[in-house]
Image (cartoon, rainbow over the protein chains, first blue to last red):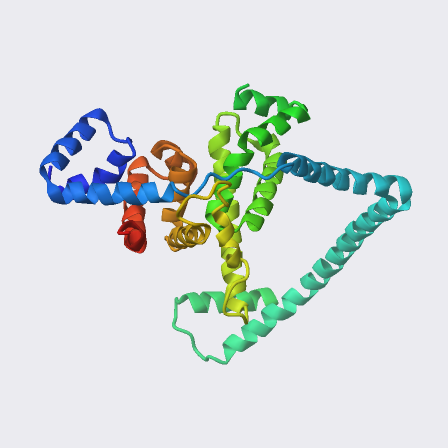
Length: 156
Length: 189
């Protein structure tokens, strides 16, 4: 294996992450190659240096604080719901009435607008047909000619 | 008791199982947050938020997945979000120095029995190490923290980072070379 290929595996070799076969290959190469041996030493030294940072531990009462936060969270969600139902019984009723009113209004407005749309659609077709008249003669057998013929017959 | 059993117990309503999981992983999550954020105060807050997120998400946790890998993923993602928010704040800040980062000295905890090196020198070294780790590109920083301080195998890191083992090998190799360049002044002493 060339130095370039070996160097790709040096970090994993130092961390004991290579297969036995590959590790043996790297080891044999490093024994006879000063450049790769120096690179391996550099990687190992910098990793050891990071290891001089002392281990970190969670502060005292950490788990108690986490549990308090989860309890608080559960209580606030459930509590808000219970408070709403028990202390203000009219609020859910008002919300339901609001939703029903919204549905009714939406349906009524939709009906109103659909009706208005069907009234205006014919006027629109007539307008479009008139606009097309301004172009003068259209090429015979073209799509535009067919469209204008159809639009004109519909508007009549 | 196995993690999977504890997760299942919690899902069936046993709150004590969650407490056992918190106690089991609190040091690992805290250590990951400290190394990622470089500030003990932010790290403690982040670690608490991670466990609250876990509490909320456990009912939807896929029981076929490994709990510890999932926990590390939640922790890393939370820290990355905090770092991104910190970068945005720094961008819009009028002050030249970021007060949050001043706390990184605390990363090196005081040795109860100081050696001949001296406390000041130890703090300086700790600051230099953290600065070098912090200056790494995001994926190199994550892989370094998980490998060096979390003692995760390459396969576990690949799972947390949702990549391949050979990608982790390459990321860590580049990270170590970069760290060597940044820290060579400390290694030559």
